[in-house]
Structures are given as structure tokens and as C-alpha cells.
Length: 268
Image (cartoon, rainbow, N blue to C red):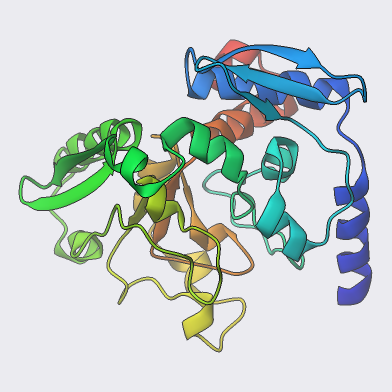
């Protein structure tokens, strides 16, 4: 059965994006990063490119069939946005390699935050959590994290939940463990909470991990409400990890509103 599910997942990745997917993904990106994408163009091969404010262009869908390993290494925008992210309180059981947001389009991230360490660091700012814990993040992620901090301060004191926020890790230029791929920490868009509270799949023999179901929803919901996805909703889980990917949160809200028969504006 597991092999059958895996084969079905591979077939899904081979299906080209339709016009509706493109329009929705473009809308979500434009809402997530206002002013960044200025238009689209189609080349002679029929490939759609997104034009950016700095004069660059980003391929939306190369039309190639890719294995999961190839998606992790060389995803286009459509690949990175194809798997729908399940918003709280949804914590479904995942099929093999089902992990929305773990597939990243590196050309998009480099266009947004910088193509190398020096250019990324020009956009890194310092912010605080709880008035004392310093965190370095890219400016848009830092702004969202400040909203998280403000909302958390309004909650009744809870020492157990507060312990998840000490220590906190943000920007750090590095590769993902045992790979040559840049970590999202390299772009200043990832926040890792207390690792003692959030196991990582490479450090654990449990797959799935029971904490994927029981990690505090109050924390996950707060991050999601401010544009961060949670690594606990991946088959290859990273429970301490939150990642600023507002386009995925916006798309998830729009799809949920559509499923509930709501108007598009109700998704915000």
C-alpha cells in the first residue's frame, strides 16, 4: 500500500500545472510579497515566467517530471507551491514525501532575499522576543515575528509554553544537515525554537513522531497566522522549525475558503 501511495504521489508531480493553478499561485505570491512580481511573459516553448521588480524573471513551471530528491534540489515555483499546506487544527497523516513547504524554489528565495551571503546579510535585522531574546531575521520575517511576540505577550503567563521559546535561533548561513542545499536559515526566514521540545527526523528513530500530533497548537496557530509554516507537518519532520512562507499560508486559506463555499476575501 505504501508503495502504491508513493507511485500516485509521483504521478501527481508529473501533471503539468493548469491555468487555474498558475493564476492562484501568482495571486498568492503577489499578496505575500507586494510589488515583487510585476508581470508575466510566455516564451516560445510555452513556459510562463514571472517578471520581478529588479528586472529578473523566474520560471513558474518547467514541465519536468521529478523525483522527490530532484524536487528538493531543483524545484520551480509550481513545484514549491503544489502541495497544499494544512492549516491548524489540521494535522493529517502524511503520505510518503508529503511535506508542503519543505520543497523550496531557490531561485525565488535568492531573488527575494539575496543570491549570496553578503547580499542576504544586507537585509538581516535584529528583533527581540519577550523583550530579551535576540533573533536575527530577514526584514519581512522579522516584522512578522514581531507580531508573534506582541500577540504572545497578551496571553496569560504559561511557563511550560514559554519554555518552547528559549532558546530561539534565526539567521545562520549554512547548508541543511547532510546536504549541499542552503538552509532557509541562510535567507533569514527560519526560526528554530527550543530543540529539546522539537525533535528532528534525522535525530529520531520515530517516524512519524507522536509530537507531530501533540505539539502545542497555540504556538503553531500563532506562527501560521503570521505567515510561517511549521516543519511538524512534513513526513521528514522538523518540529522546532518555523519558516516564513506567506504565499503557502495565503494559498491554504484561499483553498480552505473555497472548500467552505466562502468568498475569496473571507480567506484573509
